[in-house]
Length: 399
Picture 1 (cartoon, rainbow, N blue to C red):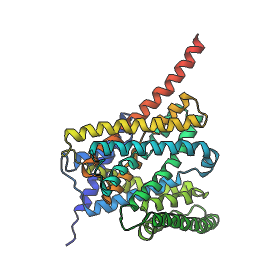
Picture 2: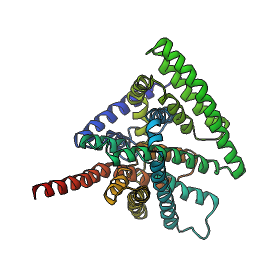
Picture 3: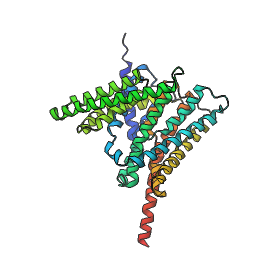
Picture 4: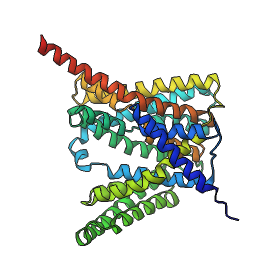
């Protein structure tokens, strides 16, 4: 007999994530923090009202797909071309340094350098992969509030963050592919290349099709529906036929739609579906999976180490990249700090790693703590570095 308990689970998740989100927003923290806390508090760690079920996991997976689809639609390809070279160099260092830093932190903490098995190696690398992620939604809101979004450093942050995500997804795809010991490096490269060729063909075909439909029908509800169908098809094909993470297909589908005139209309409709149902379930499910009970003092120490590595590697990595492309020390510091927040991107990567056994169970809670701390600290640090600059200007003027 069909159980209707999932109705109650959904109601509790949607209500709790909204209430906690509003509370965190009142104290000038991102709503995603509230949604995560709702999952942790209502899950097995504290109240044990909610538990992980197959239904919640599948709904959460749809939430991930919608989040990555939306991220793709927010990609400004023209802006990327304009700031391409500088943004790429900043992003390359902003990915490379955290990747190495995360790997070293995980490997040193595990103490398995001498006798590291293949799975140990991949799990250690995966911690680095998680730290490569950048979520600029918090940075964007902070810079917009201060009127610095269109500044030289603000534009560099936006461009680098987009390339950062693309590089991160490619690295994620490689690491997940290496999970299968029967697959060679050459076949992995071939498979990824073929998928991008397939995506490019889809881009041309669907772009022309959507362009025709937009011109003929205008702002019709069928356009967002067809767009989401494209997202689901690319996500399915990526995972099923190319062995690539489904979020890669969803992200590329969003990039295809981002080039259409109807992009804003599609994004508006998709975001309603996302924030009303699927995204809250995803963030709550991450909280539900997080077990604080199993955290020993060793894991607490690892969490603190990971927080330090997460912050310093982004500031140093992106800062070096910015300096190499001609930014001043002050601008480079701003760019590095603007890239610190991991947010929902790191959660998506961590969730994907957990699904394929690439993240140790005891490391899941430290990763969530890193996401929370970096998400909370980024706007504070940004306000400090930008305020410091303004005070210096005012001081000179007053003098």
